[in-house]
Amino acid sequence: SRKSEKRREKAHRNAVIAAVRADVVRRDPRCRCCGDVLLRTGEMHEIRSRAQLRGKAPEEIFNSRNCVMLCHRCHVAVTAHHVELVPIHPDEGANGKLDVRCSRDGG
Image 1 (tube, rainbow, N blue to C red):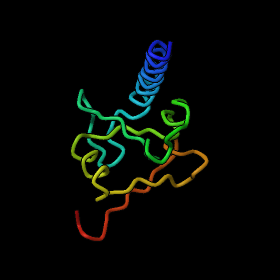
Image 2 (tube, helix red, strand yellow):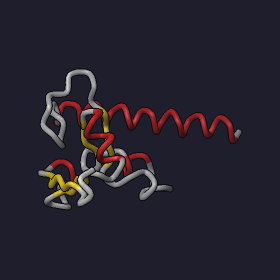
Image 3 (cartoon, rainbow, N blue to C red):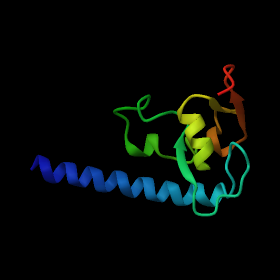
Image 4 (cartoon, rainbow, N blue to C red):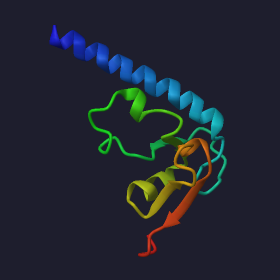
């Protein structure tokens, strides 16, 4: 049925997110924006948003090239578009170095 198919899709998506989160937590013990140590408060952020990747498979949205760990404060700033995270080497994505850019409005 459609309901059971949706349930399987959601379970698959959640499994992909959990696996990627575990990899990204290992790779990023510090906030990729400010450098603070992430104890239990790290939040995973997608550099290319889910809205930009709408309709793509979970593996294309949630992967180590697109996801970084941020502290809550930086995650709020990035989500509000006060700070932009740009991969220096686009082919490496978040697995490489990031350029942290602040907006001109000082947000």
